[in-house]
Image (cartoon, rainbow, N blue to C red; front, side, top):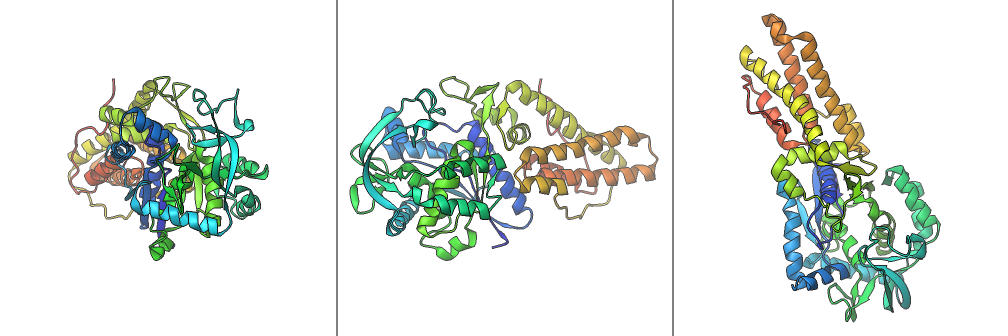
Length: 472
């Protein structure tokens, strides 16, 4: 439906604490949710946690905890991001939820009825880190390039398989009809090349004797569902499928945000599964890059994992949101360093935006009463244009340019030297410009934007504490 907007992140594994890479993904999703909400749309914003699989089972055993207890503790840590990052999601799904488990069973049954699930014995190379089978062409020096320190496991057992090979042509036809299905284009080209090269059926179950932690396969108690088959179904179970079909039809299909390591799963495997179950494919998929730390890949083994809670506690929510949205290129990898964080904070937030707010408020307070602003603002054209194609950094830069222009206007016109009438006109224009800037900033740094709008929408405008005190 035209006035409905459904956006979802991927579901992070609960095998470790939340890190800044997932913080980027969920903040990007939040920007889109807020942007569309401010345009009057009804929003369903979904996130949650992926809680099955070998990796999580082993983590639970390592901590001497029951897997469900382990998942409960870590799921809460991810849900705590809502407050820390000021997120507006209205659904937090867990793949251990009863409704999700029921949906996964129904999905399995539909794929099986369509002839796409069969049992076979095969030998595969398996990366526990990815929870994925790996072909020789994907390996680097015999290892998974994403988890080079994790030894590949050789699995040789009878499992259920999904007939992925059957969907090569349907997927390519779908991609041809939807030229903007995956953004950015280089990622779309990558998945089209992958599918064009031929698809291999993939395993969708594990023996329960080896992996007790998973959703039981219907009518076969010896097997549990493979984690990727189970987890992907959250996108439809979150909006009521299969029990609440009218509700599901109102929201689905969704826009999905995912990291580049999820490209194959989200834009090929999941779409083939949807086709098999007789459901519409996703609406669109945005693939974001990774964050490095001072030029190095973020890794627990390197000891450079960045905790978003610690950053927020020290520097504030909006500061962290701003840096990630402006400094990490939307379509590519980006870098985080504390030195650069402080530099961007001081230059953009303290000196540029903070200075504009302070100097304008001081002049307005000195002048006295001004007309109230009843204008209903809409997003600037450039902000709209950039957010529609997920270029968050370019959208932020366009707003920053407007802030710089307004500060430049201050310096050129020297309003403190103007006569009463000219000063009034200057202040009215500047307040209106600042309110437009604040409106545009609402999806990105909502707390600060709302403070500015509240402060400058009154007839008597008073100075307040600095929004962004300088960092030394």
